Length: 360
Image 1 (cartoon, helix red, strand yellow):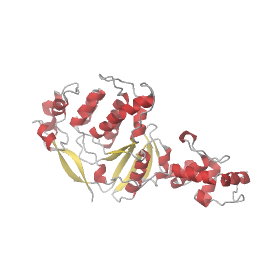
Image 2 (cartoon, rainbow, N blue to C red):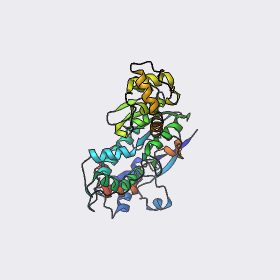
Image 3 (cartoon, rainbow, N blue to C red):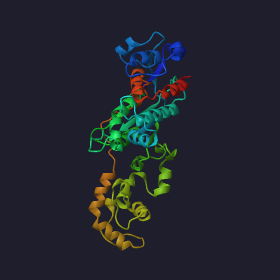
Image 4 (cartoon, helix red, strand yellow):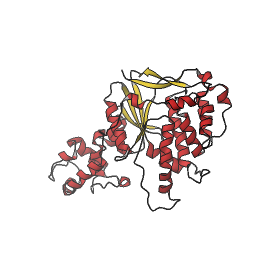
């Protein structure tokens, strides 16, 4: 049975927090992260000798090892989407150094909400499993200082630090995209006998191809809508693994994927249901049992190679070199020293109150 590390306070909850928690500073400044961490986060995990030496006398959390539950539930989060959503949805904020940090402030809160949904109490010893994937950091372009792309790019590094500070396993991509990482995680975890369910948190419909029965589902956290295989089949009339074929026929203009003229959802689902893959479609014009069948067949034959290319573009990689084991995806507890620095840089002081309520 796999094992995983969970944060369990060796000194007891009150021994860890005590008066130091109640008297913690109201604000963390970037110049005093050590004092802030020592007074506020005595119960954090202390992963190194250096952090142990800094631990306050009121108590420190040790890292205890607990058996994984017989059936685990794993959340895989599209971090790039969450950062963009926070940039466009959270209030803008410029810190004392003149840096835009509004998206990171929003990201801290949305990820903390996710953690609170997985663990009802900060001291809960039951393990939680999750990972956040990010696209490669965007390259600098010729945009202005107030251009949204520029502002998001400049917050990307702090956003990665925020995920690490919250103790969440991080998949920062370099050569591939975040959705390839999510697809890889879903594929491997679905084959793990100790995993009951994989929840992919994203609004990107490309991840629909990863759905498997009720074992791998896609959660739209904005609409609070879950798409499992039954719901997917009801909507598209095909199996989830056929979704790249479907996009090759119908297209997705928002993603820059052209479809085949004349092909729509009904004709695509009917033909995929009958033939399985677009590679198995006959190269003649008499195989479609639908109105306008000769035109549909002729258009497909004429654009066959283009359809194959679109399918390849729409098919996610599920074989990246990622550690998707349960121990690697176990929540590691809040990293107090790093979190204090991130909160100071983002000027997200209201996060402390939310964490205090979570631990109280």
